[in-house]
Length: 331
Ligand code: TRP
Image: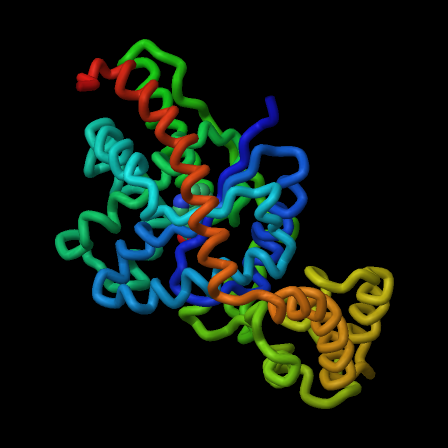
């Protein structure tokens, strides 16, 4: 039997280059060697967008198109909608009894997000604090052992494995499986503004669906080295977004090494570099745009319907084992 891969994204907007190197490329590679599931986590998206369900509804189609355009292939990967699988909510419900409020509040990724969103302890929506538990249900319901995702998801994997061990020990079963993070190739992609993370909410990312013009404008405005004022001044490579993107996307790394040396010595202008980067990114994005232009909403929706149907039967198989292990009545 093939190992199982599961990963997903909250549909709160279009996916960007950070997602591409952080997990999409890994998913495309793994779909040939794994039983692959990719989930659009619309239920999880509600944990901080309860007031704006229309945004989620729109983003579901965008994210599904992003998946297909980067080469996630519905014939190899089951692409599905989280809300279409009530078994995931059921498993979440059982898991919630195996975790303490204290443990939930210690998850470092949740802590950071709470700070960003201004959720102080007493006013955080309970669903938000608990989303790592629902994520544990997503992963374990599919018996996934491999989770390709960014390193911010590591605390979720740890929490999942704690729940798996607690469940299996408590109910003397081995029906749930532990999992591992399969991290992206280049760590976290820097934002266009030099901030540590490219993110939709910081508005500092290049989206997979951006037009060539928009990509070019974004590249030309990228953060470089504020001390590199004149062309002949020596420049800094560390913290320079243009170099971070060349590292992540340029197929010719020898050329990148030459640029770095020249830039540090002085004499290489930002505009020349940015034009080069623009060419590199346009080449990365061209095939993605080509596939995207062939996709229409009706095809996407029927693909999601089929994927969700298939995923549901896999999840309900695990849930039957879970209920048996717990001694829940099947009437
Ligand atoms: N938390 C992930 C995100 O923020 C989405 C997600 C939900 C996920 N369930 C998952 C990722 C299971 C990996 C595995 O995008």
